[in-house]
Length: 486
Ligand SMILES: NC(=O)c1ccc[n+]([C@@H]2O[C@H](COP(=O)([O-])OP(=O)(O)OC[C@H]3O[C@@H](n4cnc5c(N)ncnc54)[C@H](O)[C@@H]3O)[C@@H](O)[C@H]2O)c1
Image (tube, rainbow, N blue to C red; front, top):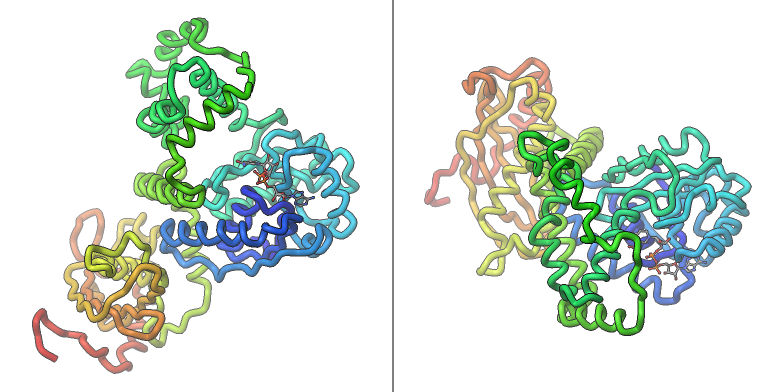
């Protein structure tokens, strides 16, 4: 992972990159001549922080520091990655590259351009080998795809280095084989956008009806399987060949306006803009961004449960985060931290505080955290061994509210043989003890579904922790039964 990055242009895309980078612990300098840039970036970062809090409970690194620089030169000094996200004008991009090259000769220059070929972008550079296109999608802090395109003079090795950086940022780098204008995604989106404008112009549907035609139907299919896999399934048992035989000839029918572009007359622009106001004008753009982010998070989490598509990328990102946290030093001679998070607003209930089910969720996550500490992780489970929870006793002692920072620590009360007894304590950032959970887990063989002793590597990691914790005083509340008075 890189430590220092620069962003040139802090608009919609630069702001999204800034959020993704600092949320992953990278230090960033931003240059943008707009005097309002600081305010706008602050608003994007607030939305992004909210979205990340919902996206994953995995332990992320401490947030990277960021600052506004006074010039391109000041921003790029010492940057390993230079994200260019200035407006889509090649003369402007070239001017910015000339300014940055006076100071920085080694960092990867990654242009966010939606359409220019990297060969054209790198033409006037003194060190062209380090320039690539890294085309992201809005919101950059949530959507995993980044299209990577190399130019004729891009050094071998820069693409691979860039791919590793984007993967570490939780993204899906897609290396485009051939350099073309607009790459894959925007070429595709242009065709859809053109057809949509025709449909509005010809009065076939309003902006809202066209959006409905997407989001209630094929848009849901696209998010999980894309186009070709979806059509393969649509071909039934005979698959893709049958699908093409059946629907291929329709491409010759006059369904599509093909490359005939509607003229953007004032009348058409008014029509689209006023229909869009009627459709969505009740919400501010920042509100719409939050609604969009919540929906994207929900879709990615659902896909994660199926280990599919964008959810697979999220799962890989979380594994990376847990592995990095595992190597971070923790003192296992005392109760150790198994969860650190903030309470999302939707975890609160009609009583205005965190719902009981979420206490249970956090304690379950704490048990998963303890499992990773003792090596009973995903690799161990794939060998057919795991722990099952047999019994829990939760005490709800104090309230937590939306946005509160909470931490769960875990103490091993008994770690001998098949049995593992844990005691979790959930604290508020202000020090209040919010809840405790005493949990008995049994080690099992996933083949037979019966209890068995843990494998030696897990037993060896658990034993010193259990021994150290046995010397600690029994925590207040351990061994309590329901309704028992103190
Ligand atoms: N908006 C999208 O959905 C999208 C998606 C992918 C890629 N892109 C690409 O990202 C790039 C930026 O697009 P955007 O949508 O963020 O535009 P934007 O207009 O929101 O932001 C551009 C920013 O660059 C700043 N700027 C202008 N001159 C500058 C200079 N000399 N140095 C530094 N900053 C300067 C502007 O003040 C502005 O804040 C474009 O190349 C665009 O094609 C956009």
